[in-house]
Length: 276
Image 1 (tube, one colour):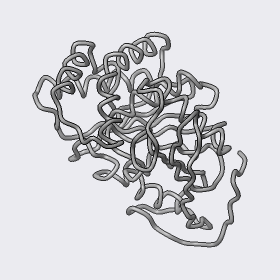
Image 2 (cartoon, helix red, strand yellow; image 1 turned 180 degrees about the vertical axis):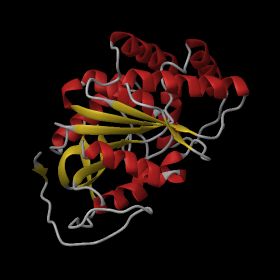
Image 3 (cartoon, one colour; image 1 turned 60 degrees about the horizontal axis):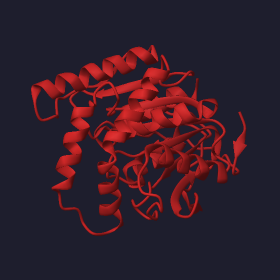
Image 4 (cartoon, one colour; image 1 turned 45 degrees about the horizontal axis):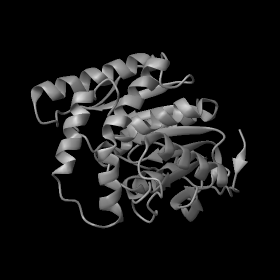
């Protein structure tokens, strides 16, 4: 275990999100830096610390602010480095010069982490659409992925090619804002068929999303549009958890937005992974 980007430890006794935390852990500032990832820049927000580095991947349409409360709370429990970032076209990041491709998106993240010296040993934390992203990242860079936490994830067990084609048709009829965010989301959605095809190939290529382990948290309350979709959603999470060889974690009483609705549970699972 090594320290990266410098860590000053002071003596504190704090409690975060309603559970007991260890002694002698510092409150650490979140640093911000734009990184060139191949012709465009992504905005990274990182907290210095030790490996493995906790890397947060946001749900569809969200930026790094989705993780701010968790990123601010975790230093009172663990000494690990923490990284959130804005995907291309989101938050303060520039649009990709190449359009959308899930593999290229994860290559850009990897480039950014490597540039910052944070990419050698990571725990990936992904919510919703990011379930597809973190699984692709682990497939492309398996030697660097220590563990994965899937949070109510979209995944290749749930999504079908027919679903993806319908989503593309709906996107063609939708009106998005004519700004960076709107263009980024539209590009992502128009590439959704290719994203699901690639994600299913990744699923078929390996018996587990990550050779070193993973955990799946599922929403305890139904939130999708129909009973059939809710049943498929839960079943896909059971299948994904089975490939992780870990029990499915249920966020009782909570719907889809678990990073905000079940913050203490998410933090607890991250802390467990960091201490393995």
